[in-house]
Image (cartoon, rainbow, N blue to C red):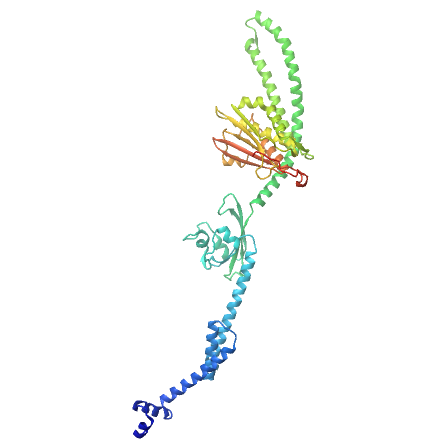
Length: 491
C-alpha cells in the first residue's frame, strides 16, 4: 500500500506491511493463513458432527475427533498413515476385549469348582486361582498375577526346598501324589498337576488341584479293616469254639478234684504227723501240701481267664442279627450297671462318683448295647488308676444340641495316654495292659456298638493326668413320634 492508502485505511504501518505479505501469492504468511482457515473450518465441521453422534468414551472421542479433522484437512494423510493406525488400534482393543471375556469365563469356571485350583505358567508363576484356593491359602484380595508361587502361597523369598511342583510342570505328563495337609498335618491332601502343553516342546503351563481326601482314605481303611475283621472273626469263632471245649472239661473237673483232695488230705495229714520225714515228689509234706493247693488255685484262675477271653472273642466275632430297640429308662439302666460292678470298682479306685441328671427322657435305643458300653468304659477307667488318690467320675446328661440324645462322660485321673495310643485304642486286639489284664477288644466293641446306634465317641487324654471318654447316643425314634414338648432338663 502507498502512504496515501495507509492514511486512508487508518491501519498502522506494521499491519499494512504484513497485509502486503498476506496478499502476495506463495508467501509463507499466506500459506499459514490458509492452513489456519482450513483447520478452523475442519474443527467446526467435526464439532458439528460430534454433536450428532451418541456419547463416546474420552479416548474414542479423541480418535473420532482426530480422524474427522484429518479427513477434512488432509485426505491423503488419512488414507496412507492415520487410517492404518486407527485400524490397528481397533483390532488391538477388540483382541483385548476378547481376552478379558475369555479370562472372565475361565475365572467363572474356576470359581465353580469347590476344590482349590491354581493356574501356573512354566516358571511356576501364579496366573489365576479360584475362590476355594484363595480361602485355602488365606490370600484375600491382594494382587497375585505373575508372582512366584512361593511368594503368593508361602510368603517366602526362596522356593520351598522340598517342592518339586516346578519340575512336574515342565514334564509332559500329569502327576498325582498325596501329602500331609499344608496347614493341618492331620489331614491328607491329594495334589494333581495337569499339564496343559500339547507337546514336549511346548513350555505351556499347568493346573494344580488340591483335594482333601482324609475322609475317603479313612473310609477305605475302615472298609479294608472290616474285610480283614470279617475273615478274622470267622477264624476266631472257630478257634474260640475249639478252646472252649477242653476248657469246659477243665472247669468242670476242678471242683471234683478239690472234693477228692478234701477227702484225701486229712488221711495224709494223719500219716504225716507220725512220719516227720515224710516227703512227696522230693519235697517235705508241708511244702508239698501248700504247693498243691496253690496249683489248684492257679488252674482255677487260668480256666476262668480262658473263659473270659473266649467270651470276649465270641463277642468280637459275633454278628448281631439286629438291634433290640426299646424305650430305656436311662437312670435305672445306669444304676443297674454300676451296682453290678461296684464291688470291683471299690477295690480298684479310692473314690467313685456318679452324676445322673434328673428328669432324663426315656431313650429309644438298644439298652443292652448302652449297658455294655458303660460297663466297658467304667472297667477301663478303673484299670487305668495309678495314684493313691485315684478317682473315676461318671456323668450322664442330655446332649447340649439335642435334648433327646444321651451324653455319657467317663473321666479318671489315671495314667492317661499319648497321641499315638489314642490313635489306636479302638483298633481290635490293641492293648497297653499286661497279658493277664486285657485282650484289646473292650474299646473296639464299645466303638462298634456306639457306631451302630448312630452315635460317636470322643477321647481326650494327657499322660499322667487321666482320660475322658465322651459318648453321645441319639434317640432312634423319628422326630414325628417324639413328644410335642421338649422336656426341661438340667444340662
